[in-house]
Length: 100
Image 1: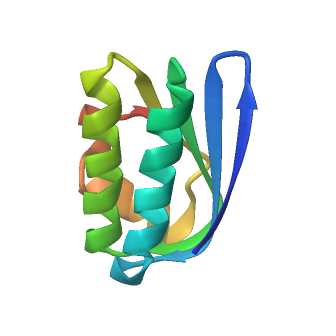
Image 2: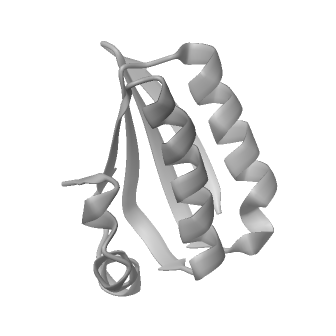
């Protein structure tokens, strides 16, 4: 998984790319550190170019989400398609994230 950040107007966009698996644990820790550093009101995970998500990566997204929500931040998943969208739907992540 590759990722990049874009901070703009109270929103931190995290653009994710490639396959998201358990092996990306270090990247998720870096994402969480950036969220805690910037303290944005809204965090958006752009999944447009994510080709695969495993259950471990979903768990890591939920950990990041839990930390953000404790500080009353909105957390958004957007642009998911294919297998990633299917897993988000099956996992009922609309109960935990704003889905765009």
